[in-house]
Length: 137
Image (cartoon, rainbow, N blue to C red):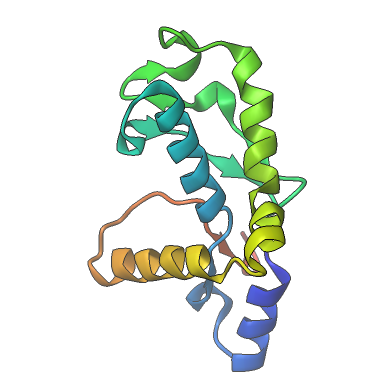
């Protein structure tokens, strides 16, 4: 769990299962957008995920990435040599934005607003968020 998310949960005294961190949702969104743009497709057709800790140690799950029902690695025009440059771009996006703009608050604000909307509308989406595990999990 993200340190700030855990600190928020502990400071507020909320039950751990009532607090969600944005996890790698923003990174996953950036990944889907980048793949879509490189192939000339809508990011809504790209199903790919970034997992792990946000930043330098995050991992792109290339082997499970799909476009519709087709594995990304089987998509016409896709080659594995495209993967590492994209993964590096996704891992370093936040630091690049901070260098240029001084902060990354707008994108994470949009991700948070989307997450809240999904919850309020009970959309039951599968997302790369964080939550603190309770005992027995």
